[in-house]
Length: 229
Image (tube, rainbow, N blue to C red):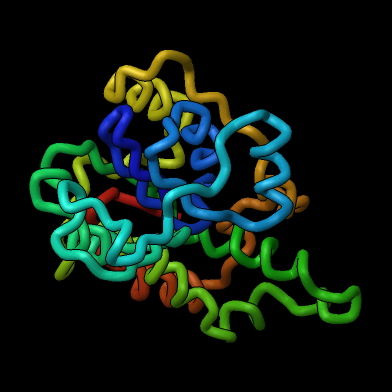
């Protein structure tokens, strides 16, 4: 998650939508007063190698909280997948309303596949025998809703200025560059993009029951963005 006072934007990070790569890329444009939340060590190494600012200003104590930014002086910690609800409850309404708020969404069936390959990448060789169908039945995919739709909505209403689509990533990055009036193009590094070696079609990965399970769980996103398997 990034709050840039320099370019007046708030980037909310959803899961399995190239969020880490985009977060690293946007760090390049951050000033010393901007808020950048930590990411995992291996990805921080990528950010550092590029010479971009790392985690900064994400923890506040009552004595350090700026009155012009926050509604009340209290302890707060911004974190990676923080929701719009939390951010809005802390920031002054003027900041929330003025800054350009955006995030990314992705076809839910593809998000589930991406999560599966990410998950098994941390398992032992024996544990990696976990099949895709067994993974879906673990119900870990419910976290994708928490780190997706629930990030950019409040009471089921979208509260960001724009939800960009992962499927149109290159064009969307150009749109963001123009919208924010950045001094350079947004150049994505390869972060967490190497977990999935098998590029099978999502139609092949899922059986009909699993297709319907995902459709039910992500019903709102599918209706909003017209996703199909």
